[in-house]
Image 1 (tube, rainbow, N blue to C red):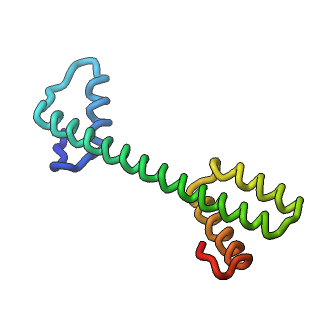
Image 2 (image 1 turned 60 degrees about the horizontal axis):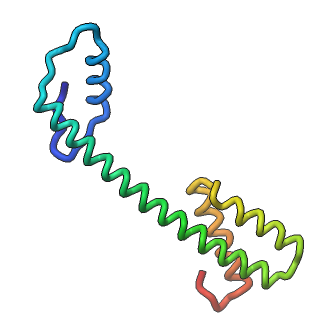
Image 3 (image 1 turned 180 degrees about the horizontal axis):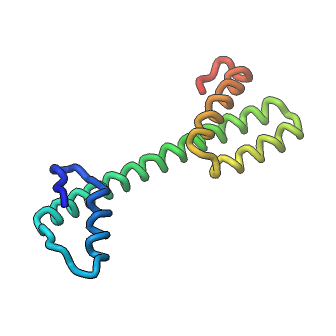
Length: 121
């Protein structure tokens, strides 16, 4: 088993370890290396959790900004058909991929600036 450097996580080490543990006979394990790998994996999990939290906050912020702009656009346009389509768009924000959400934000911001040129989107 190869040893990761401090604060470095190698997922292949875990896969190799899982294969070794599934073997009919238990291989010789270097517990110091295993400990280092587990500590690196633990740190990586904490980092991933923090990134997941940060991305969740960003997603919520984007959705709130888009929703606010769409509501303002709906009021400015005063069209029942447009209102219905904007309501459907607002409801779909939660299921959008990050890429689609960013694209929606850019498009909505452009429309918002057309309706409210003195405002910052």
